[in-house]
Amino acid sequence: MALWGGRFSQEADQRFKQFNDSLRFDFRLAQQDIFGSVAWSKALVTVGVLSQDEQAQLEQALNELSEEVTANPQSILQSDAEDIHSWVESKLIAKVGDLGKKLHTGRSRNDQVATDLKLWCKEEVIHLRQAIVELQKALVITAEQNQNSVMPGYTHLQRAQPVTFAHWCLAYNEMLARDESRLADALKRLDISPLGCGALAGTAYDIDREQLAGWLGFASATNNSLDSVSDRDHVLELLSSAAIGMVHLSRFAEDLIFFNSGEAGFIELSDKVTSGSSLMPQKKNPDALELIRGKCGRVQGALTGMMMTLKGLPLAYNKDMQEDKEGLFDAIDTWSDCLHMATLVLDGLQIRRPRCEEAAKQGYANATELADYLVAKGVPFREAHHIVGEVVVCAIEQGKAIEELPLSELQMFNSKIMIDVYDILSLQSCLDKRLAKGGVSQKQVAYAIVKAKEVLNMDK
Ligand code: ARG
Image 1: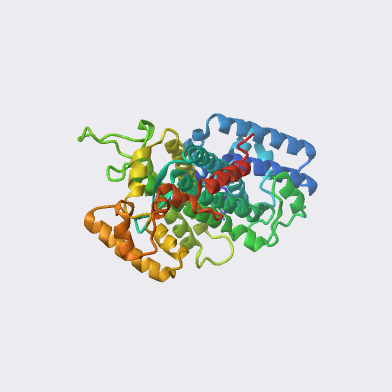
Image 2: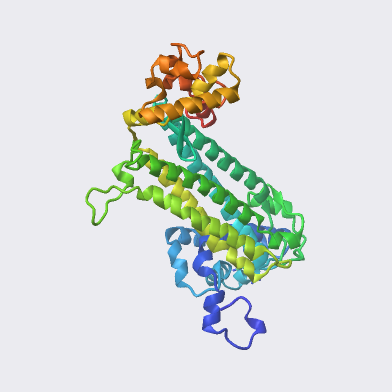
């Protein structure tokens, strides 16, 4: 039976009921709804609606229900209840009879659903932060093992300057650290309880909402009842965090897909995260990474969808807001799966060092070094840039690297070039010179690894 039958004389059309019901997705809020109901029953004691004894009976029945849900969460789906709040209430009434009908006093599904969803978000933030940290740790370990793996760094997908695989790993570690801090920040604004705001104007029972918030594990209670039942900023903030986090994972995936390509051949992905072709026996496809890259799209879609759903909604609650859950659940599940999958991809990834080094030497990645060399000899940088451009053209014509040109030939471009130029043009020298904070020199990278391990508590 619906929660609101009295006002109606006709049954709802089955097609409308199916369209309107949310149990098929909000069943995931069962534990939160039960937990919130226990706290609400305690609040009702403080205002004399329930006796201690009645509250104890309700709490016991709710705890039993919680155990049943833990044992078989899917069983909820067999019910034709409208939503998870109706389901919990009907189960409670089945267990304790009329007493169960008292629980909804002073409460609305509007403050209830807002509370349940915030409780769910808080738990997910914990899981997501753990998953991010796991991936960060995997990146730092991979970095540590590859401090000497030189490879080309790119701009415009053209070989630009040599970097190390370690430095590449640590770049993603930085992005993930920001993703983690975005969640920590979102948590501060999300950790505020809407329970006790009723349908929109506040509850008519003189409940201590701060105490109630404390029972629910929230830092405090919200300030305005109209805002509390219609606020979905926490959904938007988690979706934005997911959208940005997925963009990072998508770029991570794209880089590795390219490094793994036959053309680059810098890495070999483990058999654990690749699949074969049904037709072409030689193929080993980077499916895990392609799916991470591909799934980024639906998460961006969920954020945009929710923004549009909320845009133009009048205060306070409107049924439009029921649309907050499916997109959020899917986006958070997707982000979490992709974080775990990215961690798995790093486990067993092989770097083909000779091939990386070979590639780093090609593509005139040391051209900037020659320009800096000329600058050190007193040539203004802009002029040095032009001279080196000419040297590169000459080397390309001969199919050689800059360091393969004899000194006499280099001196034709500028007489200040001496024999010591060849040291400067080496890969090692290219790396070593980038000593300033954040640079690719092995010293800086080693320091960055130590710092990252400290932050991630990896030495313990
Ligand atoms: N299933 C609803 C939702 O997810 C619960 C709140 C219903 N409130 C109402 N006034 N009909 O938003």
